[in-house]
Amino acid sequence: MNAIKPLPDLLISQIAAGEVVERPAAALKEMLENSVDAGSTEITVQLFQGGIKLIRVADNGTGISRNDLPLALARHATSKIDSLEDLQKVASLGFRGEALASIAAVSRLTLASRRAEEKHAWRIETEGGRLSTAEPAALAHGTTVEMHDLYFNTPARRKFLKTEATELSHCEEAFKRIALSRADIAFSLQHNGTVRNHLRAADARLRIEAILGNEFSRTSVVIEEQAADLRLWGLAASPAYSRSSRDAQYFFVNGRFVRDKLIAHALREAYRDILHLDRHPAFVLFLEMNAEGVDVNVHPTKIEVRFRDPRALHQFVFHAIDKALASPQPPSAATFPTGGSRQESGDQNGAGAAPSAFSAYSRQNTISLAPPLGIAQSQAFYSALFGADNRNPKSADTSAAIAGAEKCDIPPLGFALGQLLGIYILSQNERGLLIVDMHAAHERILYEKLKSALDNHTLSMQPLLIPAIFHSDSLDVAAVEENSATLQELGFEISTLSPTMLVVRSVPAALKDADVVKLARDVLTEIREFGASRVLTSKRNEILSTMACHGAVRANRILTVTEMNALLREMETTERASQCNHGRPTWFEISLADLDKMFMRGR
Image (cartoon, rainbow, N blue to C red; front, side):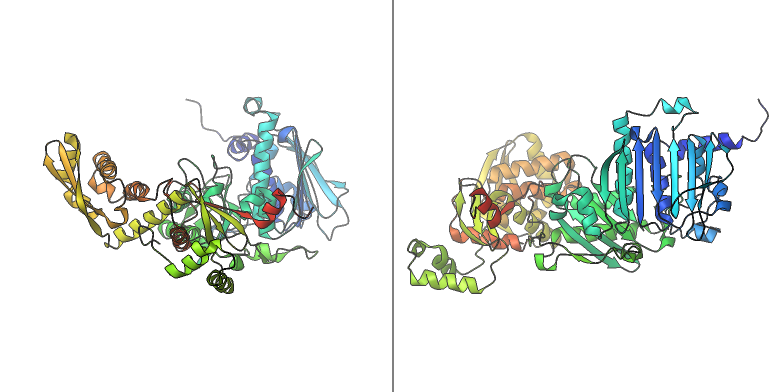
């Protein structure tokens, strides 16, 4: 065995670079974080060949003095922490003091900087760990870092880099994350001499819209929750904006973009009831907490963290998102929260981030149901407003009813006009036309009702006037005999008539109009597949969703105007009514302005 000997400093830095500088985007991230920590208000990024040939980051931050320039490229040298106590409550993005040294070990790097009080800037260069002496340079106050020819001296690593387009996409993602975290800083990104992105300093909402688009902002709910020293704020998109990948998920802890399994699980659970199949939610969320409650010194990339009280944090995040998705703010109350001191500080020119009201995009779309289709208003009201007399526009009763309705606030989902092809309800509200999928909407209402009743042990049973008898196989018969208590808890009374015959005597009252035999078969299938204990625990919501689907009003069922309006009122008081149990939207709105455009009115 060879004798133990210390490694050369250059080799140590190159080994460290393997973790810190995985690809050009990782180097860009570290350089941007240094610029943010320096108090910059403007940061410009220039890339060539996806960042492989060149990454240049220029900022107007505090700068680095001439004497400190060599230390900036030394391993484990930093101005951000001095002691273990500082490490346990890190407030800056960088703190390890190894990023620039690692980048310099695998590239040709130039560092130029000028502090405001100095007459001119100073520049040093390094190639493969060899450091030049500081030389005067022309530069406004701030710092410019140029990284040339990544992995020029480690060709084995260079060959693992992807195409220029792929590396550019990773660099753009790193740029977006930093830009989202600090809306009060102006950012610019160029690639091969072409401007790819230019972001002025703005408030958080405008920055999110600039990066993720207006559709994301328009279809999202505002998150603003605080408990003890925890605060969660930002935007969580409705399931209608769900994605096939996780490319629109941004979670920041004290301004730092992180990926954490605990947080991811809490968010998944909050969306579980309203997300379609394998779709992924979209969000931009900022968690503010005591710095001592989170350990950011887990990995050199600083993208992983550990929380001191993970269980409490999981519950806090879950309940904040769950509550917001269940009860979105009405348009008049939809204001975007502001972040901490970083977002509120503004830049030196007064273009800082200030509180900003959202445009009226949040809709009142909460929901709870009296099955099967209760009447929310009096029969006389709807009869007068939409009944037979409505065919006569001069009817005094109808005119009075309409006048009375106009004096009241029109409900968020408006009043029904009629049915389309036995599938959709057409409704009119203050903004225009609503199209409601009556089966999907009723399914969500029944589902939430069943969940609430089962949780509160108030799930009532409806005895059938004529019991439903059907042929079944021996496995279903055995399932009935072994799980009668579970079936009763779910609202069913099923018994055996013979080794091949079952009889349904009672069903949940909310589902009395469902296809009883098919409903019973599906419930028994779920019990056979997952077992009674899982049906009432981890698989509970899935079986309740199946039951609600059977009980919901079917296509081609003709509803009276009174029933349609009753359904609309139930939607307005039921949680998560904008999506059915499978994540599909239950309604869409077409504004009067959009209708005018379609018909070219006013042109």
